[in-house]
Image 1 (tube, helix red, strand yellow):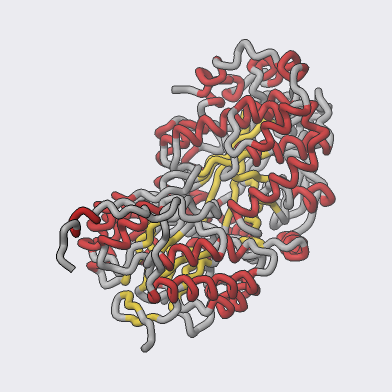
Image 2 (tube, rainbow over the protein chains, first blue to last red):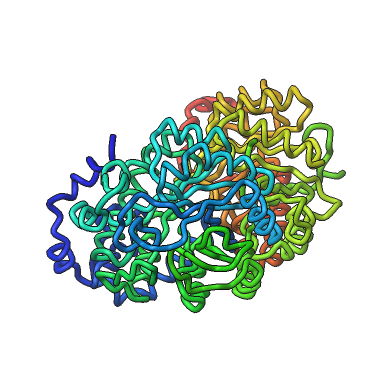
Length: 367
Length: 261
């Protein structure tokens, strides 16, 4: 089974027409439902639902506290390489961009891990550019062996693997994977991913499912907001999460809602996704998927993040650098500019002041 | 006479067990546990971190309580057993609440894997309290596997929906010779009282207390409700009249027809 088949069910769905028929009453009715179906979710993503944002936010907050408690998982990303074979026109790591390419040695991985672990964090997300030549699975898993000394939960945000490779990753101690489809619209995908392995839409689309089959505990998906109509991308991200959660019940399926940030590629977003849109997306998704995690990165501003923690988010980053070796060395050659530069300690203080317990450790790796 | 019940070899008075997830701060926990007069406190081992003292949840459990680590996050019996071993190695004692959940949407327990883990850990000397879906045959197998109590759900974890499984809970209370502790789903003190009135040995509450605006006051309310429900059970509930009055013409009057008075 592939999510492509699930997407087929919606091939005749005409979004503008669907949205044009949504009335206030439809939004209220979706909001009153105990369990929402995909069309109810789409109703909450409609332009008409924008005028019910406060009611959506109230319900999203209530449901998040009920299901997750007044707690917020903290994490930080660690970039270990930035070589990339792809030509994604919007990305700072894009093969044709002139920037210093680096890959951490194992000693440097250990130094970064040591530095990050001093914050108390026990969860780490490692990232590479997408180069199987420079950042081979062997290289990544060797880094994982070092990270296991410092962290109890290790996630990867790397190129799409085969199912067998995901199995190897799980057996090596990786318990989570993040894979952004970037854009679910396949024709836009092809326009933006000009070359490299990532240009194969289907292989990327099915990567989260291969990870689920391989026994990954946490699978985090998302669309990069700014490449296409956000309502359509939010809808398919939600449908994808629902599809994975239904098929792989033991996996914790989560979504991220990344908005495009300035980067070395100099690409301007095709679509502006404003703050109201982002709040509508996050609250609609929470109401549709009450038990699913929502991850919020440091792409968002301090002001937005302080408010979004109350509206459905369950996992938030701190102390972020998107440069290779950035935790121990200075900032250069980053993938994109972050907006909220607060440290883990600053984030913990903010969370406490908002009535949330920062969680540094929420899994004990069984290795 | 004191109204005690026994789990393993421990005699207990407090029938309100407390969960520790979902509090807005670890610092809120001691006050809530005290207000609940709870003796058994469960903590997800996944959250415990002895390397970070200030944020280590274990440091916020009063020393007078029995610490009962739980295997939250385990998807199989094997994972539950490994987590229990880690708990023991961390010095958390021999009590263990088994949670084996491979359904992330409703967090329903996997009874089969729970029975397997119970048997392994009971044989290793753990005092095992398994969380389960209320099913009589599974409960019997948990007894045979060496469980110290059986903890059926009233409704899915965190749902605050009350005793949705009431008919099945009643059967377990009647038929299982171990303490039945209703775990999960209890959203308000009146529901805890209802479980106790039915004859449950105790209840385990987390979400309803931890996410209350004032957790300590809510914990106190649960304490009173559990005591009230238990007293009502011991006192013997009065007869509940069916709807409509009793028949004015007795249906068995004919049996006395012709009696010589």
